[in-house]
Image 1: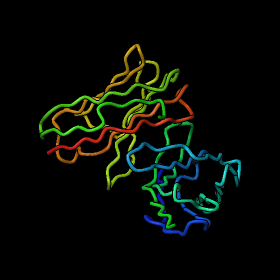
Image 2: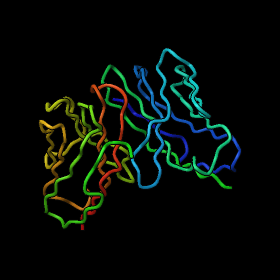
Image 3: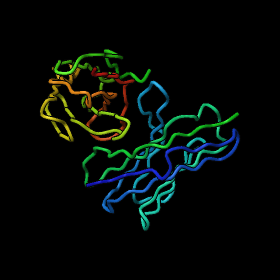
Image 4: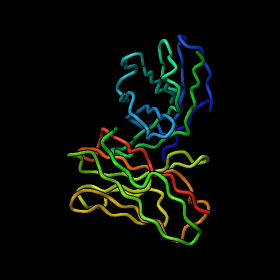
Length: 112
Length: 112
């Protein structure tokens, strides 16, 4: 089955810096990946997704990079703001299951 | 407000008891998913319903059951509760059972 995990449980950055959150997955058949943001007391919120036929996708201040060779993806947040403080999850889907498997999460702490 | 409504927000109950968690999906969404989030296991998929029918089942215990009603709201029933069932339970919905997850704010269950 799919196994998705994040590299670091906590990432601390200064306001204005760029943040990079990493994630590894185990199933080479995984073909769709999603990043979620979970703020305290709320449910996960969709940030950005990427399909396996792409290497990079950009959103507003966020970029997801996918390296299928080493089964790794990353979420880059530009000019990190205090409002970006949250737990970030990567999730992967494979084989047309349409049920994402979530990693454990990385807590991003942004210091003003 | 994500449009997915979960009630109650908090629930405290004793071991051995039974509780029901309720979820109203976002307007127009036909599919509902239940997830359990605990500190040591991350977000675990429990079960999915689509238009009243069970579509996929994950790591759901036999003590747990769910259903989706004709008005598309869903209920998750947890019985013979154990201390280890203490967790956040999230409901998510999608329009068609494929992409576009929207999560509710969750129900925090504490078993004492």
